[in-house]
Length: 316
Length: 257
Ligand SMILES: Nc1ncnc2c1ncn2[C@@H]1O[C@H](COP(=O)(O)OP(=O)(O)OP(=O)(O)O)[C@@H](O)[C@H]1O
Ligand SMILES: [Mg+2]
Image 1 (tube, rainbow over the protein chains, first blue to last red):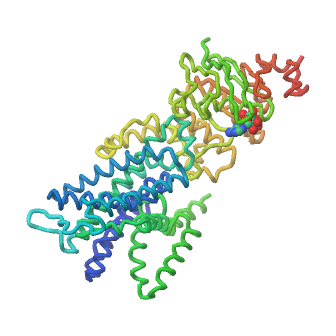
Image 2: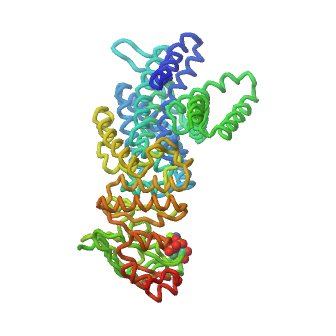
Image 3: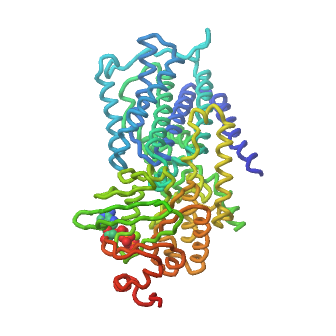
């Protein structure tokens, strides 16, 4: 099979599954899970820019996600702005976070960077829990749905397909950036930042770019989440959520766009399937994650790629 | 001939240890200039200060007419000053070709917005860079390894990759920290051939090297340091016959009548 053909199938098959899923599984609860999967895919695709490709630990993704959610929630409920336009607000919020937090965080690396990002996430959570205009721990209710004319995406099936469009667009953009000179530069910074400097590149710019992309993706996903839930409270945006995003990325395949998608899918749906095991499900899930990370450092996506490698080795 | 590099009173102190001590020398245009000296004499530290990899304690470094001391690595590099490292610094998870392509990055000016709205222009830019990478791969004899992951390569091939990446930046001056170290004799011969080709193509070379056959054969001028201070400078012939250099470093086998 030619490489191009294979690539097309790699896109078409998952896309067809994604289109068919909510038609096969019509239960509203599961359709909700599928929507959450789409939202998480966007977050993880973003996280992949900064942590997966550039190698800068970010444990504050829940904070970014929260900023997106609250941007949409506040703009739409307090100012009556259309949810569509709040997405643009959310992108601007992502830019502000990316640049405003990206530049200062250039000064710290490794564990210190990880701690800084945890700090960011916690500060966001504490602020939204205490500010009056965010309605504190009571959260924000009655976030309106996306509408086109008189058609409203408040039905789960319609919303699922709308969000799938978001995933496809943002997935294509992520894939293109990953396979461009920027993706290459991000990886180069991860592998050896001094060598990048030695070829005349100021690593501050690509690092801030990667951080900004992560923030924009995280914020847009946060917006979609707010609209989907219609009601948000600060208790969702925890450090736990940030680490879950990291697990999704590592499990699926760090640095790989299909890997991130797969990771988000598996980590959202598998716990639901394991639910029958009662309290054991979390342990089973954790062990599975641990096994993959230990024995498949490039994630479960690497199972799909082994064939290619062995063919190449055969030729050698 | 103009000076490409003017180093004046360069000093580096690490907590308590003076690694480079009041070192001054000049490097002329169109020369291969070598810096030699015993282990730990401050050679790498000198290059690291010249290229902005390490902050300077005192002194100045001038590249042509511009003072570059005080600038950091990427600023120095963007003045067409390339370098390799004594302990290879490579992008280990990437292929040889990708390693070289990163060398082209600073010359690829398209912004991210242009990239997102105009795939054609991005493709054209990438194609130009890729063509250049293929040329350089051919030039350093690494074409057939272009799709290999760098971490899996032999040491000599990794060294060539690092050299190729620095050539991709289109340097006018190249600092090489022990390019022949760790190579077997035939690899060394090949590497030297490539270095001479690089020099002939208009790139001035500043070389740190322990292999005296290499140094004495290809250098136009040599600066010798010991304990961070200059003890001699001159042509290879002058250096080979300098008693202090023989005592401190060379031993007598290199003495030529
Ligand atoms: N970052 C550092 N911190 C402290 N001391 C250092 C540092 N780098 C180098 N030194 C010390 O400075 C001295 C000079 O080191 P340098 O690496 O410049 O020597 P060199 O001439 O390149 O030696 P070699 O031939 O072994 O590469 C050595 O004593 C070394 O231990
Ligand atoms: Mg050295």
